[in-house]
Length: 264
Image (cartoon, one colour):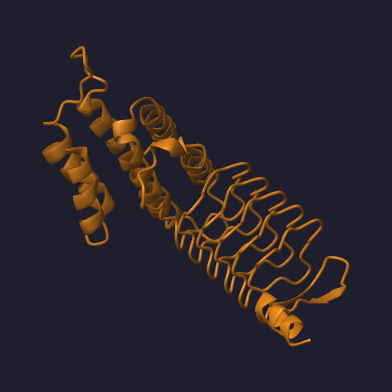
C-alpha cells in the first residue's frame, strides 16, 4: 500500500501544490492502511504521521522543527516509511528555500532547512530502495553544513552549495552538473563517479578529495585547492584552472594521453 502511495505521489508531485498533495494522500491512502508487526502491535499510527507532515507547514518555528525531528525518528524506526519521508523532506526543503531571500536573513528558516538536510544526509541508506534517487536539484543550500553527510547518487543539478561544508561527505555518483560549489569545503569528500560538468568550484577546497572517474568537463576551478586530490580516470577535457598558489595547471585528458603513448 505504501509503495502505491509513493508511486502516485511522484507522478503528480510536479502538478499539485505540495501541502494539499501531502494532506490528500495521507487522508485517502495512508490513514486506512494499518502497519502492524507479527504480534499485531501498531508500529506507528497513521494519524500521527499525517499530523506530523501537516505540522511542516505550521506557522511557528518550534512546531516545524519538532515535525522535522519526528519524521527523522519515524524514518529511522519504521523502514516502511523511510523513502516516503525522504521524499517529503526533499520537497519540504525545496518549498522552504523558495521563500528565502537571497540575503539569507531569515535565520529561523535557515535553521529549519539545516535540520531537514540533516535528516537526508544522516539517513540510513540501507533503507533506500534500489534505482531511486534523492532530488535536491535547483535548490539554494548555500552555506549548509553537510559534513560527513551521505548524498550518494543524489540529483544535485544546478544546486547552490557555495560556501557549504561538505568535508568527508559521500557524493559519489551524484549529479552536480552546473552546480555552484564556489568556496565549498570538499576536503576528504568522495566525489568518485560524480558528474561535475560545467560546475563552479572557484576557490573550493578539494584537499584529499576522491574524484576518481568524475566528469569535470567544462568545470570552472580557479584558485582551487588540490592537495593530495585523487583525479585518476577523471574527465578533465577543457578544464583549465589555477591552484590557490596561482600555479597554472593544464591537465591532458586521459584518452589523449593513452593515444600518444600508444603512438610512440
